[in-house]
Length: 74
View 1 (cartoon, one colour):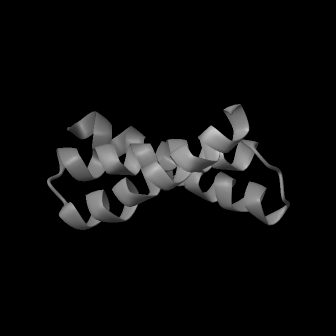
View 2 (cartoon, one colour):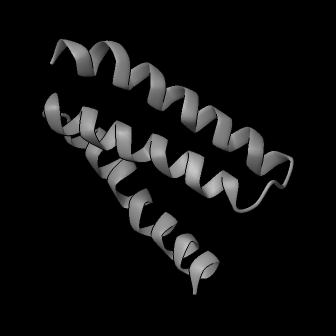
């Protein structure tokens, strides 16, 4: 739990912010992979801390990013 709170939160935040920057400069498809990794990390943090608001917010983003992944690969 300490590892998740100390490292996963900060790494996920960095990924989210980097994904936003990449989207702002229209760096597709890297933006969806970076932002998606941050969303996955924050979903894990929400699960470990039993924070439903985090799981709902970031958990809903994962399937949305999956649509972007499908567009890139198929």
